[in-house]
Structures are given as C-alpha cells and as structure tokens.
Length: 159
Image 1 (cartoon, rainbow, N blue to C red):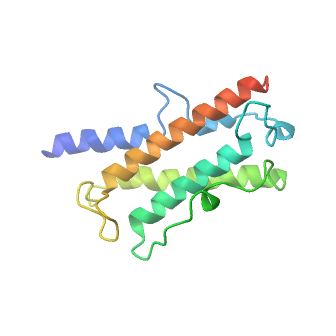
Image 2: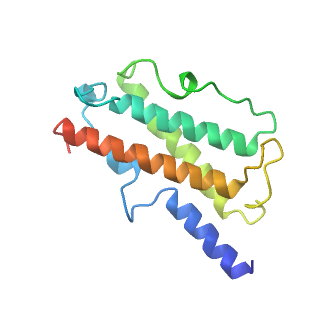
C-alpha cells in the first residue's frame, strides 16, 4: 500500500471510531440523559442505558487491552462484559464511565493514526486477529449499542 493510501485508510479508521456521518457518537447519545432514567428499563427493552453504556465501555476496553497487552487475559462472556445492576451505583459512576470510554477511544484513534502500528500483521498473542480487524470491531460494536441507547431514549420519551 502506498503512503497516501495508508494515510487515507488511517484517517478513515480514526474517524469511524467516533463517526457522526451515518449515526451519532456516544457523547451525543448520552447528552443530557436524566439521571433518574439511566437505570430504567422499559418493558420491552433488554437493557437499561447504564447497562448499555457500561457494556460499551467494558467491551471497548477489552479490545484495546487485547491489541496492546502481550499478557492479555480473556474475559468471561457474558459476566465480565455487562454490569450486574440496571442502575449506576451513584451519579458519578455515569460520568466516570463516559470519561473512561472517551480515554480508551482516544487511544484507539491514536493507534489508528500511528504509522508505526502495523494494521495488518497478526497480533502476536491472538489467533489471527490484527489491529485493523480490532479497530473495525470496536467501531461496529459501539455503533450497534449506541443505536440501542438512542432507541431506549425514544422509548423513555427523552429523545
């Protein structure tokens, strides 16, 4: 791949991780979300907003950890990827989860833009995955669950 095409690819990867073209990003999805509704689960909804937010954060962190940590330990599905409770333990937990998500996302975006990071070689401690795949996985996973948060907010009448 020539340098110009690689730069274009890296720019798109960094952009898609926080894209607002075809959908909104997490910050917009949770903006002004009333604290009393964060743990509510409408009758037909499988998760509360808190559960979705934490799941996105946990899964994104796990993928980031996998991409960079040679001592990575696989988590247990589904227990280690979903919070136990519908509601955050306190109001500060909501903000901390968002800030943690944003910090990890910034690290993933930096990885996408870092020309010293080989996007195509298999991750040494994986079983064939590469950085490109993991970045696309994060983008896809986040977009899916952010859409669920928007739908949940519509169901709660707060969108």
